[in-house]
Image (cartoon, rainbow, N blue to C red; front, top):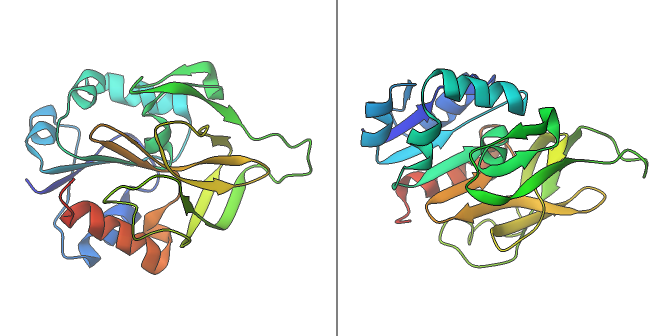
Length: 197
């Protein structure tokens, strides 16, 4: 099973699947633990609330399954946020793969929340997945942000720097929506499907 998209209850599933099919992939959308474990690549999508997304994963019995995966895993938007320890949103406990907490953007500086629109990303450390994406523009929609730390591959800026791409072992994350980011997003997804990671 080359690539599996996890059923995490997100609202961006059809666009993620369509973006993968445009690249010639045949993704399987599933909550079946055996199929997820057997995949060459796993994508964890998500649009919605952190607490509810974790409830869906728990209902499907997938929390420990995802934590134990050894193949490359890519979290998209909320899927990336789920890789972290916790979130201010719903005071949710997450997958606890990255030891940091997500916080809400502050509107006190006149910032629009949610952060919505196109932003460039800046690489802060080398990685096979992100190396060709430096200074490219991607589409973001999020109210909560991941802090910058040793897990950060790329940053972006909305009133403050935040993690735009992350990696912890075999777990990658993109805060932006590659499925809505035109050629840059296609480049990321193709890299995830084809690059030895």
